[in-house]
Image (cartoon, rainbow, N blue to C red; front, side, top):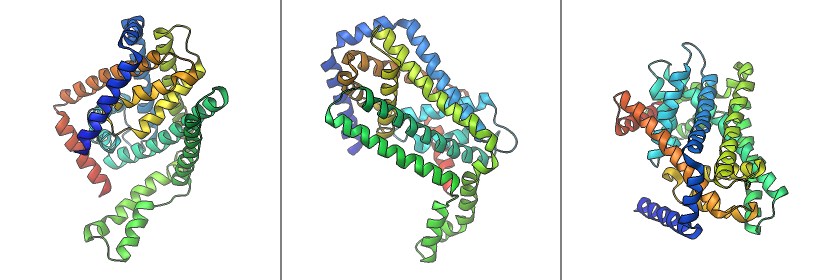
Length: 338
């Protein structure tokens, strides 16, 4: 029931936003973008997945090495699963390990996914922090947006601090918690038997930076390139939709706001409604037409749908349905926990 209410609310928000900014204005923006412009957006968004795949490859240790084609295919299929289900990262990320386990040992592939996600999360936090700082320093805004921006900066400090602790302090939160509960006879025997395995898995993650110092700079560059491609995508789209309206600073703010929305509403498939409404709120402080920013959100949805279709096609090529792929991802997630 809650899921249905949430879906109804998102659809209602989507319809209200489109009606409020004007369907005619949105249609005009789409016409100005054209097929050529949309092709450019697909290329830039495709580059983002290439950079995430390369970052993942940098985190895989041992032999055999993960090949680029395999990493990119797994990324596309994992993203497709995350886009068509409300489970998002809970299954889309583990599914990547399932898709390459015939090539790379599960422990190596999944540890690499976790490490890459820690670096990615830290890079997202840094991106949000930069965008919030630019927003506060350059643009005039209502008080509630200023409060949200300050809140984002606090969140950035927390996330980056947590990532540093996980990667440098060599903490073992899962196994330590399990040991504490086990000492008080609060967990079943099957949990107790898996504590050493979980600790080894945590060691793989927390000692990664010590073992792979030479990989850290390229890994950081790939994560940075992912976000730069996102800023470029926003800039190109707005320039084509509303010529002369966009600057690189506005593109940076819009992209960083998109990262916030993505984090907060990842559970909403395609972020229906929330992307459009969130972008519309930026129109006044950024001195942009609301229709341009809502059109931007719609164009980005369209390219998500294209890449989702590519990911699903790759699943079918492997003889997998979406349901079977999700079941495989759930099995892998369970294996990781156990």
